[in-house]
Image (cartoon, rainbow, N blue to C red; front, side, top):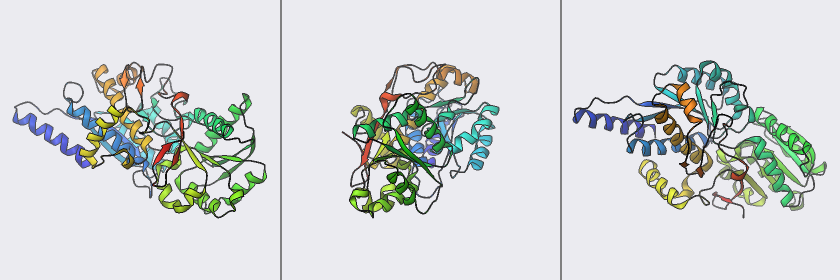
Length: 391
């Protein structure tokens, strides 16, 4: 994938030399994501979204009067220490304007002090913890086109109410992401939200079993569970639930970290034995068909992907695609690769017709969140593993 972008830039430079024009140096975008994490698909989805947008932008003339965009990807393997090293390296790269993050909020939260100190422009296409944007930076160098926990939790609670739940159990990963979700849930309940919380229980990454946590919530009176987990923990729970008698299986309403890996493949037949829905901000099945068809022409050329069912982790792809087009507009508006100037113009980009939706103004000086409550939906896995919206 990265080879494709390098080849495109090399061809553009060759064409310039043949015509007698001086080749123009590329404008760099960074990606710090979980590229080498086993069974993860989120980093690759984000990368494909960026490269698809870059191909379109470069085909239309690039930025700043003909300079091509180029992606530089680094693997953090979901480890904060690796992510911090990556951010330090990106911050020192001449011509690098901004860094895209990956799926894991705990990694990004640990990177925030380095982003602040180096004034590195950060774009979040997946990670949802509130502190990523509510970070105390003045000016704020973080921008997000993604889900936010304080929007996600009320929406998931509302879904439990719609399916008839009287009490909700919270099953949360013991990380900054899980704690962000709990804080959002408690604020929602304190404001009069419903249904009430029956109990909260925590699990750790790589736990081999979580059925005791599930049973605790069931015994506390929960008749639906809101879960904050990634694909590996979710697959463990789904298999364990499928082994229970049918009357002991209650609906699971999941945060979207589970969609960043091979959940369906690992869970196998157990997936269809459990009532499992997941929050999303985007679905190709609800998107503008003309826009989708245009994007598929590029993905087919770059990756051999000609139908939306073959785009895995679709929110990562779509968010990264739109963020790339938005940052390109900001670079052109700024007339420079200076990060502080581009940061300022990001707050003034208007009238962008994206893949996720049309944006009158993605960001403002007071709002670094591009998405809102109206963008949320629930989805379910079909038997073929494709996520589709819940009617």
